[in-house]
Amino acid sequence: MANLITAAGADRVLTLDLHANQIQGFFNIPLDQLHAEPVILKYIRDMHLPKPIVVAPDTGGAKTAYGYSRKLGTGLAIVAKQRTGGDTVDAFSVVGDVKDCDVIMIDDMTATGGTLSAAAKMCRDNGAKSVHAFVSHFPLTAKGVERLMGEAQLDELVVTDTIPLREGFDPSKLPFKLTVLSVAPLIGEAIKRIHGNESVNDLFNHE
Image 1 (cartoon, one colour):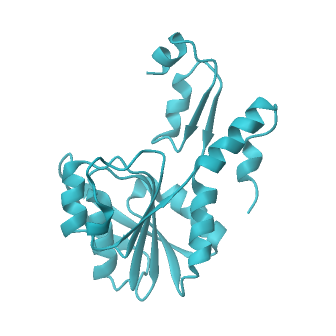
Image 2 (cartoon, one colour):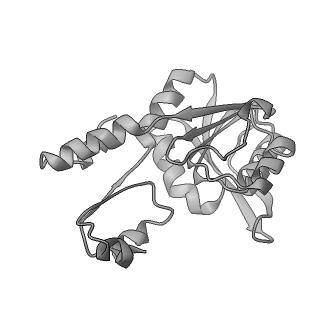
């Protein structure tokens, strides 16, 4: 895909929260990766949760979750999971204490809802008072809709608008609150800075 984009005539790429940072290495043209973190952090701070703790829904997200916990000044917990199929996950332990806490679960995307649902259930089973999940991308599948309707023990799911909501999907039917945050101002500012030869990294260097 990187080669196709270059062959099609692109001379620079602007992305947001790649699923793996190594993807940047496949491009032979300049690439700027943005993060939804500033938008999500502002929303979390405005929530004023009484006893927040950041939770990584799997070990792969531990580094990202740690970054959020540092910026928010909270504790950190990790859900250890085992994937048993393409869209099924068996979560089996929580590393850290989430009892009586307001869980802030951070992930880059959810399609089938398997990881989020399993991790949320594990946090609930370990005494979490509330579970708020935050994901950058929301390419929801039909299986994901079904799982979120029936299995996800969430109080709120917060997503960004990088991908339009699934056609025919009615958020009002979910058993929890769905919030969509716009990353348009962030992307717009990045494009402006690139055009003016200014630093894009400075967008993420401030608390």
